[in-house]
Amino acid sequence: MKVPKGWHEVKLYQFKELRELKDAEGFFNTQLETLAILLDVPSDELEELSLVELSELFKSVKWVLSEPKKGLKNELILEGETYILKPFKKLTLDEFIDLNYFVSNDYLKHISHIVSIFYRRIKSDEWGHIEFEPYVFSPFEAYDKFEDLNITEIYGLIPEFLKWREDFLKKYENLFNQDEDEDLEEPLDVKEFDSLEAYKAELKAQEQAKKSKKWGWESLLFDLCEGDITKIKAVGELPLIFVFNMLSMRKEMGYLETPK
Image 1 (cartoon, rainbow, N blue to C red):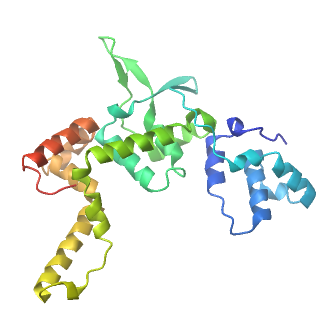
Image 2 (cartoon, rainbow, N blue to C red):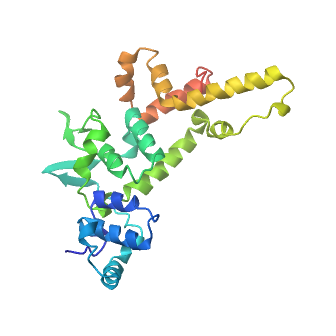
Image 3 (cartoon, one colour):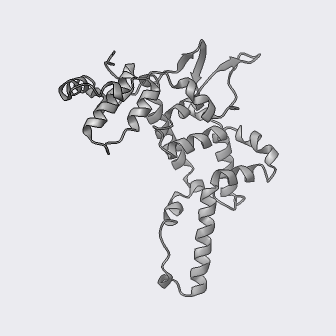
């Protein structure tokens, strides 16, 4: 059994398995499962090891308790094809919506999906301009081709995108209503209202706001295509920054009635 010497020898799928390990079954089992993942063998193959042997083996991989190096390659070669890291500022609306979903639902668990959105094949048009592969595939179908990458090749993508996303949300915070979202979690107290009618009206408004939050992105797409769902694909392919600049303009001029 070849014991990896550091994160540079750990694959993306192994990293995800390690991050999904829980301590609920005790430290011994955690050590056993960690070693099984790193050695890429079934855990029962290690059960014959003595406690001393297991402890010594785990000591040799204690680096696994630290964070991987935040490396980030701009170019990857997979099965003979070249994949280029797409700049954040060139994201489309569809791409950002999917990335936002993965970030909000445990981005380390979905790191392969995130990588599959950013790394794309490219070609030059007749004028020599670089064009990225269209976003026509589902990240739920394409992510597995990136599973055998070394984690240190792409791990830096996560903190860089999280910082960029944070700045983006802050820049357009008037369109996201983050403060109002937090207010939705506060239960209403009927005693704070002047009348039962006012309480019921606020309760109804809060329920409507919850629905808007649940269907926020779908509602945005529906509004942008003016109710014509046959145009949703074209809308989703629009540059993200262009879309939000237009939304900001519409809101400032009073054209945007419902914040997203």
